[in-house]
Length: 217
Image (cartoon, rainbow, N blue to C red; front, side, top):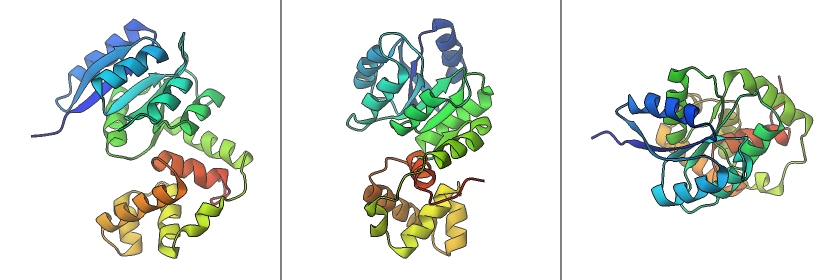
């Protein structure tokens, strides 16, 4: 039996939530298990429903999506968070990504892309809106900081895999380049994330560009 991905919708616009709920309702492997109209309400809903993925609007009353994402990210068995915004990549989206979001999408994203993003993030991979990827990298490159000492604890193989993952290669692509199994790649990436104190691949990408480990462009 196929695992059903449990999703919570967080947006102050009821009409938008209705549209997304109807879209997700048409999928056999995804279901909406809760909704919230602001960040504070989202924390209660997430705690009660224990979703796999949260679709989080950034700009909301009471508590915005940035603070809500940061609080959700530190919950026990925290769900993955995809932040949604009507604007292209801006400082708010950057703060949400740094705060623990595993993805960033525009609200007018193609429905099929949104569904694919939910599945991709649930599988442990980061998702960034295609239109924002170049700007994200440029922003991180402009604000680069010294490489933390923790990076020096990585083995040579772990560094190689870190750099390939930071460039966006999948486990299968990394395995083919490194002549190892996908399971081995997954193990190495898990160790890299643990050593660097990172949650997932989107934070790995941010880490790589912020510290100048991969030049922009």
